[in-house]
Amino acid sequence: MPAGTWAFIHESTIYEYLMIRSDEGILRVKQVFEKGNVLFKRRWVNVVEMRDILNTRFPDISGIRFKGQEYERPAEVKFVTSSFDYHLHRRYARVFAEFKNHRGCIIVLRHDHLPQSLIEQYPNVDIYEIDETDYIAFIRENFIRLLNRQMRLHTYKRIWLMQQSKNFWYENSEVAPAAITGRWCPSDNLNGFDLALNDMVVFVRHSGKSYQNVAKYWNRAKEIIPGWILEDIFVGRVIFPILSRYEYCQKHHYHIDAPLWYDETAAATRDTRVRARTVKWPKVFEFEPVINLKGLGLSLRQLQALIPDFVTAVLQVFATHVSRPIEIETYLALIEYLAQYENIRAKSDG
Image (cartoon, rainbow, N blue to C red; front, side, top):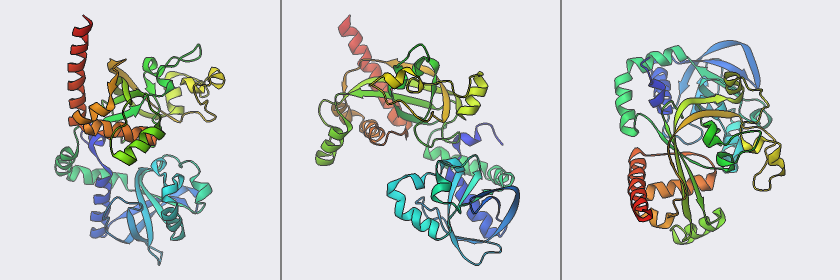
């Protein structure tokens, strides 16, 4: 497969693969979990019929039937099993209950590991892998068409917006800050298909207002609250995609229980500024610094008039505590504005 293919492939290509192979009558999947039990001797199962995937709402497939089964069942499609998280969110409670009641299953490109507490909430879950060899052949056959379509959707590399937490700058004798170590753990279900080599990560820090005040003002006025300030921007380039903590520690010869971030240290348990973790962060990616601007003092309310998509993204990341991608045009507009701003600030200081 051409170098960098996984950097552009979107889950929509799996949807297309499933629908085309189903229409051709040759779709098969490998069962890796049956009724909550891992199958060490995995078996191939033919798909008899499958309804078209019409949108990306959970579940992706409203009905699929496997050979030997007389009933249709819903299915959710993911790149990897660990990215399935609908059982963890209250807003999906009703839909997830229906998913279980109808014997919903999970179809993945590759099974990596079970999501947190899935078996507890769905003891009879079935998990299937698609035929990766056939999927790669499908991608090769349709590479130019898929590449052209994906390039229209987003650039060859992605730009991720993340929020700086205390881990980003806090340090002690046990661990250096993330800005120095160049390692970070995404607080959501990003995996190696999402965050690829050479992707850019924009870490932001803001001050002046709590989320409750920001959200309350936004819900009432649909505007950014006055006094909410953008303080720091740190841009990093991904130099090693997401690994499990176990793999990362092996790579760098760390003990698996060694603290990787400030909030995992013994000192953090006595620091009222941070919430000490009882469970260690599970994933790591590595980055190198590209841009580091501190003490900007920019009004996000004023910035909204200039780069509205960026400020909306900051608001969403603040609200959800997870990362989100931003468009390359938004990123370039931000960098151009900050360059002008820093130039003016340098002249005024001089």
